[in-house]
Length: 148
Image (cartoon, rainbow, N blue to C red; front, side, top):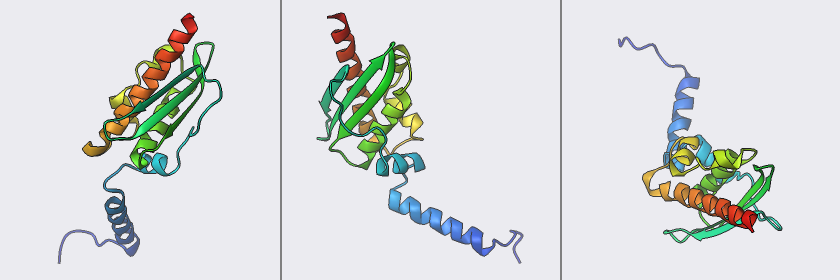
């Protein structure tokens, strides 16, 4: 007889479901799956204070729209024609930025987006870079517009 305490059926069922989910999601974190399947802040915006559109190296395009009030991100939206991981990265960037001071948002980059998402497979990490670059370009667009 082995020393390992016997697992009950519920534990075994949970482990099997976890393994199955890992197979289905390709090892994606729960946050990537959640954000990818239930995007937040998705859509365009009329007369944004900052706007950017970038086509990434994989052919995905992302757009970001910013509304800024009192030097804070009041509203932020994104669109993408990319896959689930592009949606996850776009959602992460917008969730991280919303309500934050513009100056603080300069810290949002590929690695902070990946950290927020609890990581991504290596072949999807370019999605976080695309989201970060698009966001920073929209911030620059806002800064240039403000100076005029």
